[in-house]
Length: 117
Image (tube, rainbow, N blue to C red; front, side, top):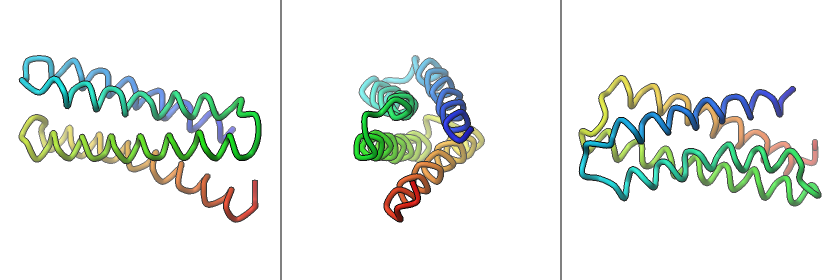
């Protein structure tokens, strides 16, 4: 069940990031657009890979990569907001969704470190 929740949340987030990429099409910030697209869609890809991980270490590694990508995505969302490329409402909504993923992934890593996995 937990796998389903994190996969669904990350897939929905990836779709939002793709829409953000399209929304930013008329801005002159192609490098940032590509970075947020890459990191924002990579979160779910790494979570999906973790489902069929070969070992506990491999699972932790995939989740750790997803967490790093989520953190990078949050950074780019902040850059876009403070650069006046996205509205306050869009920023808040994207930030909230990304922060939720960060909390979920951080919790999974903590559980693994505590030996409860």
